[in-house]
Structure formats: structure tokens, C-alpha cells
Image 1 (cartoon, rainbow, N blue to C red):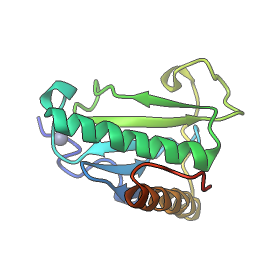
Image 2 (image 1 turned 90 degrees about the horizontal axis):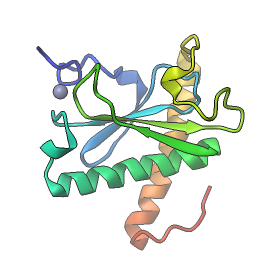
Image 3 (image 1 turned 135 degrees about the vertical axis):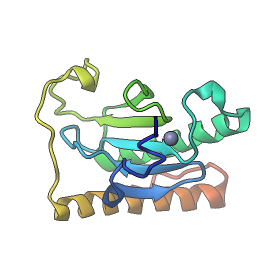
Image 4 (image 1 turned 90 degrees about the vertical axis):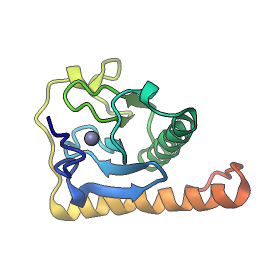
Length: 153
Ligand SMILES: [Zn+2]
């Protein structure tokens, strides 16, 4: 069975936010939960135990970087981190900011019935570039100050 990620069929290229060290971040195509992002491992692996210790360390840093950015950009109440892979067994994290107006704040997003919300091409570009801007500020700051991050929003 060929992997949809490795075959370049998912996620959609126009949803790309940024390339990090081991992963690439994309805006999820369903924006019912505003800011829903997927962080996809560049190389093929299915389980965390398939990674080296160093890769796992790096991966969790990248998840953290993206989630902290989303928390700021969308003023999230809580971030959800989901690593499932039942449907698509190639490591990808769903990083989902849960906002103050969340229709079901105590539930996992998968259990919340809704019509998928597709953004217009204009909205998509705006949202992606908004996240990109904050992510690059944050990364620049961290690289120059060794993790000491002043609150720059
Ligand atoms: Zn793959």
C-alpha cells in the first residue's frame, strides 16, 4: 500500500505554512475549528518508537513551537495534540487550538459533528500568512536568545 503522504497526495500544497527541521506544518483543510493545523513528519514512519531518540526530541520541540504559535495567533484557551494514524499511518500531529467560542470544549474534535469549513482562496492565504508571520518571529527570537522568549504577540 502506498502512503498518501509519501506520494504527495496529502496535505494540499496550498495549505503549507512552514517547513521545520523534521516536519512540515499545513493548515488543515477543515477550518471548522479555527487554526486546526497538521504537522507532518518529512520521512515515513508510523510509530514514535520507529524514531531515534534524537528525532523524538526534535519532533516534540517542533510540535511545541507550532502549538505555542497557534495559541498566540488564535488566543486559544487550550491546545489539543492528536497523533492517531489509524486512517493514515504516517506520523502527523493534529494541533488544534480550542477557542473561547468552542461549541464543545470538553470533547475531542472528532466527536463534534459538523460540516467541514473550507476557506476561500483569499481566506486561506490570509490565515496561512498570519501563522507564518508569528511562527517566523518566534523562531527567530528563540534562535537568537536560546529559548528565552519575550511575549511578543
Ligand atoms: Zn509515508
